[in-house]
Length: 205
Ligand SMILES: [Zn+2]
Image (cartoon, rainbow, N blue to C red; front, side, top):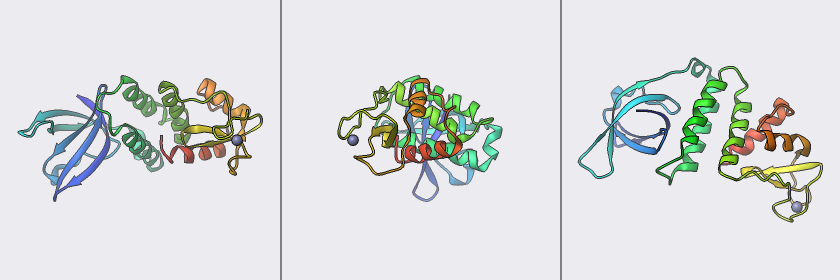
């Protein structure tokens, strides 16, 4: 089986709980023996086997080999990728069975991030995620007062739109955000605006 490691946590001295997202599930597996963990890192894509243990619902992670991408050697790209996977872990934490969409999204990010600005890739991918989950607010009504937002749009967590009377924060050009929301394309936004959108994503998916 193949999947992405979206969380790693230590248990006892050297053992690990490793959460893996594959095409159908988000599953946490038990990994024995700390000394042999060379392939277990947040963000790695791995090939692995899940073996049952004598405890119900607990599977052991075995025969792990990593499937590395070249761009993972780029510290900044790898860090941005790891941050996104941690957010995804929190977002999907209470879900076991998932739609293939999430795995495919990670596959696409892994391909695009090699050549593109990693923050831009994450912003566009987040739009795809919001779209899949039916959470894009493209009508631009302020979520607090309900007024229509015309020029300057404030975005908060989940890219919820607000007007400048309700939230005092630097906003975005509504036309640019409209294109981003409708076409999932960030072409109108410069790197500084992308960085600002990225920090909103960091608040939580
Ligand atoms: Zn308002």
